[in-house]
Length: 223
Image (cartoon, rainbow, N blue to C red; front, top):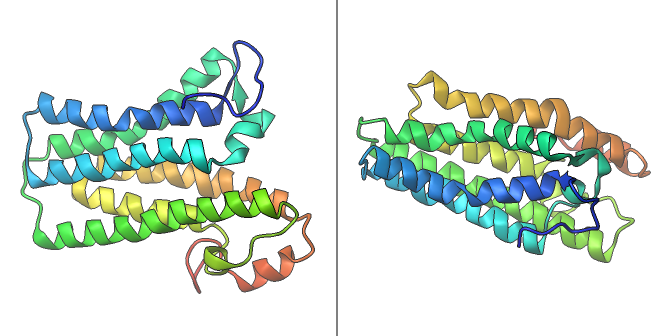
């Protein structure tokens, strides 16, 4: 736990390690806001379990089926200043528990249902596809992954993450503009950066073009 997956020069840190440490804080940060604002509402308990649970699962994932690109790609390696900048930029996600803690409106039964439904489906897609990719690359490294969850969309992990974020927006408060800031950040990090980078690396496979033409990127039959 909290170790690099390869030899890294002293004073350098991979994005994978930075993210693992950051996700570890999600549970205590959410609990901190709960105590600070003395908010033990159903809304806040949902945020504690879902937002905090996401962080716990990320730490587990980082030790069993981590994203190799985050750890092995030298372009995602930083000095201490760069690592701190990455950490602070991802801290925009702390808005979710903060907004939930300061939201005194009772969450409706419909919001409770829809948020947990979106989150559950998203969680399955996100971590399930990461696991599929990790073990496929481990036992069949020269294969383009087009089966399973990757036959639904080309980036099921991102699709799942978006669904989870929509669920967290409902919990934080859909009427609050700041609730959508983490979603905007996710769009910038995935659609404008993560997805193009991954697509570029996949072009080396002969099956790539056919897969791209027949499989949408994020939303089945739409986009």
